Structures are given as structure tokens and as C-alpha cells.
Length: 300
Image (tube, rainbow, N blue to C red; front, top):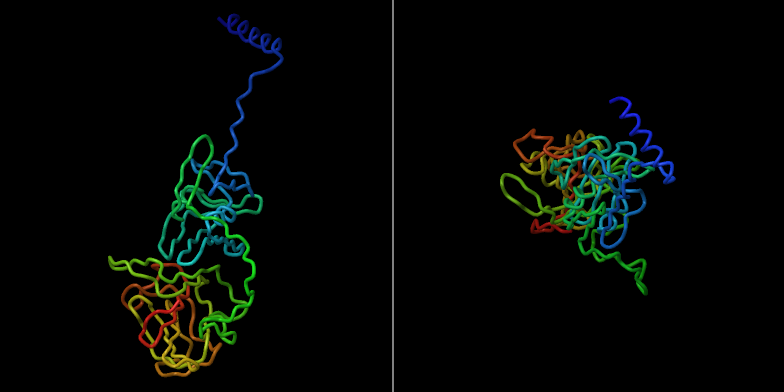
């Protein structure tokens, strides 16, 4: 029996030599991600734990979104007006418009690019997805805009709040993540859906928050949805208000009726709200910044 086995092996090797080749496993076909007709090619797509992974930056841009990566916090943010999704390198945890979601594969870095599961992200971004023969095809109808011609590059601001003297709500040098206009985005609480009334800016817990403009504090303390918040009526636009919410704490000495100056410390970034006083941690740490008119209607 042993001699018979050896004879068969020698015969196979001899046949291979005569044919000029030795049998080897077939090379796996290269994977591709095609988004709105364009191949996402910055980094070669690859299969990991049953998920086709792609570079988040070019993939998001092909669908009309922007993406950023902060190497210090290892945070990936995909965003556009009314939407943002946050992921972290090395963890399944992710947040979509403040709500916890779960990535099927932990994002990682390859050739300097953050790699994410393409199918999962495409669905999160509302795109149609199909897969066949190693190619993931994604479509949401987005077409990259062509450069405009004959447009004034410095248009006159059409809003009284586009004031160049206003300051950003975090002091210079503060760390915060990429953000987008989330006005009108869907929010869910207590079994109800409602439109978001401002812009969310993710930042580390405890990041200082400063007044964008000078004014008087007209609302102060706990709010069921906004947590610890401050509402300030503007000095230069009486009857209009800037709203800062989800604070982890207030600056010393502030109270209802206090006057604050532009750039003055108001409090610190947190995740308070959506419950009775003291509730926190139902969403990531961020500042909610809103603008309201004299009828308390939100302004984008």
C-alpha cells in the first residue's frame, strides 16, 4: 500500500514536470468597491471577517459626505448637513446622530487610511448596495458638483448672525471633532421623533465652552432634553437667542440674569439630558448650539 502511494505521487510529479508546471492554489480575485460609478481606489479593498473593507475618506466623498480622522483620539467622523456618524479605530462602538450603533468589524488603519466596512457604512448613509464577484456596488444618486463660474467668491452674508466678530464656542486651541449642520435631523426620545434644532459639535468631556456673542442669560439650569443649558439673549440683536446645551457643568458666578461678554467662559462640554436632572451618558459628549428668534422658533 505504501509503495502504491509513493508510485502515484511520483507519477503526479513526473506529469507536472512534463507539462512544465506545478499545481498551485488559484489567486483570489481582487476586491473592488464601486460607488456611484467610480472605483474607490485609494487603498485596495479587502475582505475581513466577511465584510469588505474600504478607505472611509474617498468612499464617503463618493456618496456626497465628508470624512475626517483624528489620530489623537482615533476617531473617524463621517458627516454632512443634518447627519454625522462617529467611529473609532479598534472598537465596534459607533454613534449615528448621537445614537449608539455597532460596526460589524473594528475600523483599522492601512497605508495611512482608515478602513471601514463598506456595506455597513453605505446602508448607514442611506445608499443602495449590491455585491457580486468580489465587487461591491453602491449608489445614492450623488454626482460630484462641477466648479462654478462667474460666482462671487466673497458673497455678502445674508444673515445677521454671519457676524465676523463672533467667536467660535470653544477657545482657540481646544480639541473638537469635525461637525456638520445637523439642523432638522431626526431625533428620537420618549417614543417620539422630532427635528433637531441646532448643530452638534463633538468634543472631549470638559472642553471649555465660551459665549459666541455678548448678551444676557435668560434661561439657566436643567432642561429635560438639553440637560444643563444656557440661553443668552443677544446684545446686538435683542429678541434673538443663542442656546448652549448638554453641559457637564457651569462656569462659577453665572446665574439667571447675568450678563456675559463674547468669549467669556460659560461651562464645559458634557452629555447631560434626555431625562430627569443629572441624567447623562445617553449620547456622546458634545455641545449642542442653537439659534432662536423672538418667537422661540429655531433658525438654521
